Image 1 (cartoon, rainbow, N blue to C red):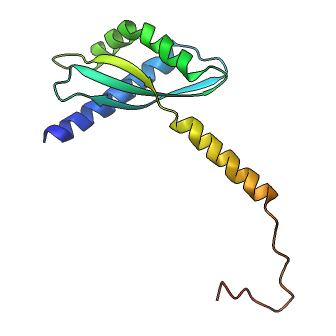
Image 2: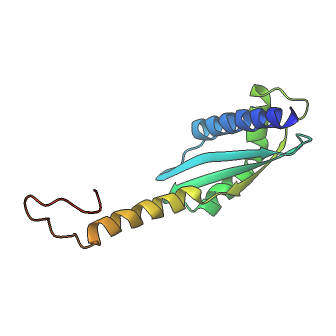
Length: 129
């Protein structure tokens, strides 16, 4: 039961923090996403996993959010009613960047991989049979 409640709190905080970060801050040439939130069992601390893809380094985004932690925490506490608003700590999650790299690698492989010659007319591919 407690794990289910924690999951709900995590998701609610993720949505509210993400909405606030997108609405209140500008990220020129960069896409910033709140990817996950992990709240401790006692709801006192929350790790916020941040993804950043674009011209702004991820470390700069995390540093920026860390310096504005009080503002973000205050805004979230007005929207999410909990006995204790968790103390937010921002951490970089490079999943988005790795995903972009993998897609680029797959595109590169598809473009540069030699193609098999076409089958003569009337023949079928034995691997498909």
